[in-house]
Image (tube, rainbow over all chains, first blue to last red; front, side, top):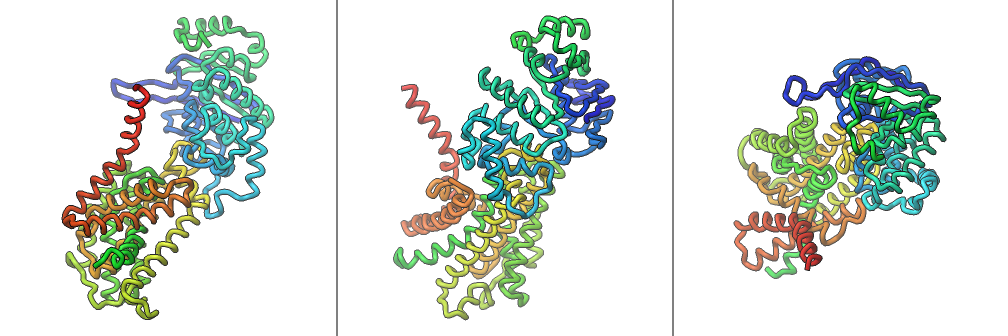
Length: 264
Length: 295
């Protein structure tokens, strides 16, 4: 479904701030793969996701989704294939617009907007039903402005928006990191449900090792712009957090120095 | 003249200026851009309409041509900002300055008189309307037509995409919309409206002048803010109505302070101070609340 070959990206080349964010990354995902991505700060996790999403041009390599080379496609054109949820709950929705307006935009993801009505009456019933599945009481607040929702509600809504029109690839960039533990757990539960229900091919970055082991059928670990560990479903099921740390030390040649990850 | 005799012409002026206010609303509030192009597109609208009328064109053609010229100016600012990555404020200033020369070229001089010309307002005399009544009727029709058109457009998919661009460009790009195009479209509509306002004000004043754009951005902002504070922002429709009413209230405020003896030369200073206070209100309010809590 997703095929990344020899992907490299350097930020601020030929300056003192030069940062090699990705170095010859190769990744192949089968349809329905749910990969969790872990790694320390600056390991290249977000750069990998943003490269796939087209936030910036890549230096080298190719990115192919479902047989289509999207390496040179601008961000907005890739949206046809990709659903995204960001770390910051503010980024996934338009705060000043109503819940139903946000959903209407999302249900037309990848379609060039025209002069048809932005929101049709018959869509409201569908939105209501989908919001009911979130179990957050949003189904009765279709005309509320999204800015009035809590961070958790906004992330749940963004998740719904990213999957309302089935994406070929779902990108989750630490989408529960900004939430309190209880809300994070709820949003992760919703994430799992929606991925399984729609059999979505998913890349999920997390800073929480426990979550990385609990979710998905494959785990990759990144360090210094490279994928240093790649574990399949069978091996993953047997792993403990301790094993994961050992694996990392062996692969990267140094101990993981990220407290945030250890505490997770 | 008594206050009551002034009311109808004042309201009429407010309606003619309301299209400027709607244009400024589209950039300042919807797109979240302070677009200074309007200082050039307002006289551009007047210049195009006046030149067209002098050459024998009819008032409808004159206003439509003005709208087209304004839209083009907006497109240029949009191009400078989105494609050439010039900051929005500077892009607007560049187009505004360039328009000064363009306006002189269109008119061939600094000022075109419309004395004894057929304008949108003299046209209304055919229906037996008085001078002041015809300004009111034309203002009302134009405001309703453009207001309804804006309301319709922003109910469509493109309109929703433009609104979302103002709130969160990253979100709407992730939904597959090219934000360069939505920003350009917003600037095109905004400056088209501002030029229409300029075309009407020129006809109402009886002349187009190359200097008539000075301070229009501040007048537009004052109308938007007054309207929002007095009449609310509950929905997009509510906001549009508020902005139009804000433009009318602004004209009434100006008429009142002039009647009270403020020299007309101080008008722009007065408006600028008004807008500065209104824009800083949220901060002052917040400071006030902090003090209350700490006490």
